[in-house]
Length: 307
Image 1 (cartoon, rainbow, N blue to C red):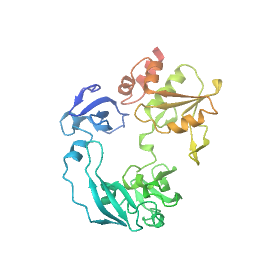
Image 2: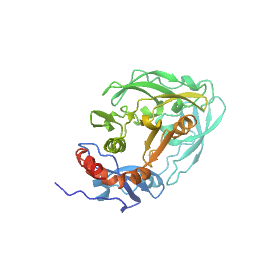
Image 3: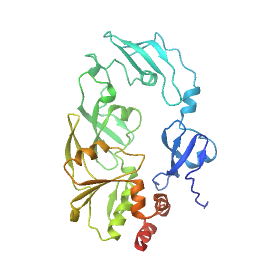
């Protein structure tokens, strides 16, 4: 067995390694890297060390010859002008919709069929194929749940069921088409002490609380929040009953649900712990805990037992 090598801080082409990504048993080690263009991406370590991957993909995008699209029609859109892309922006096109409106869209969205109208005309809501009943990876789409009059296809939301665990959730139409939603996230769940957690950072926090004799509840309270005129659900990671306090755990590079956090903080005592906050609390770098948890969490438990 080859010896584990920490790549944190090293640079491979345009990619600088920030930290090791959460480990998935049986899968190659991946690293969270920042490209010179600013993009954050998970990269396979062996491919990176062998020089097969040197950027987030911006080099290929920038050097790829541009196809002449002027005059071509995609759905209800006819291309009028073409705007070249850069290292961190995709090429765009100015188009004329059949309804008479002009719009500027990504050429990738045009050619892939994601965008077929200006998004403001009356045909927009009925122009796109209904995904209900279709299967994407390990999920099956149930039905359309939200749509705004005249909205882009990317803004249409569907409910779906995960075939791996039976969990039902919602996602935007584009998430299925682009391959971003192929399960509910259960692939990345981790079990410890009879409970299942969504990330290793959450497991580390649960072990820390347990070893310090702090009672907690994990994802037991769900709140309905109104954000931008829509009702959305939010379930904080941890609840500390003795302090009547909620805790949300977030990696520096995955700060989703941040709007929900701030909305809930208006009425509840909730604390956001980013990765740097956790490292200060744990007394070590999180990458050290990731290395200790490659096979199981026994070494992590031993770490917190000594602190």
